[in-house]
Image (tube, rainbow, N blue to C red):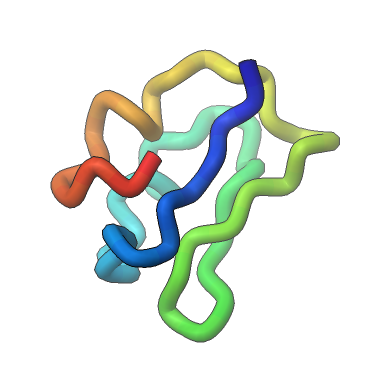
Length: 54
C-alpha cells in the first residue's frame, strides 16, 4: 500500500525525511510529499511521524 500524507496533520518537521532509506520524501511548502517511484513502502516514515500524518 502506498504511503499517503494527511496534509492537515503534517507539521513539516522532517522526521520522516530523515528516516526514509530510499530518499522518497521531501518537503514542499512545509508539507511532506512522497515520490512514489522511489518509495519502497517500508513504513519507517509512518512509525516515526509524531503527528500521524503518514
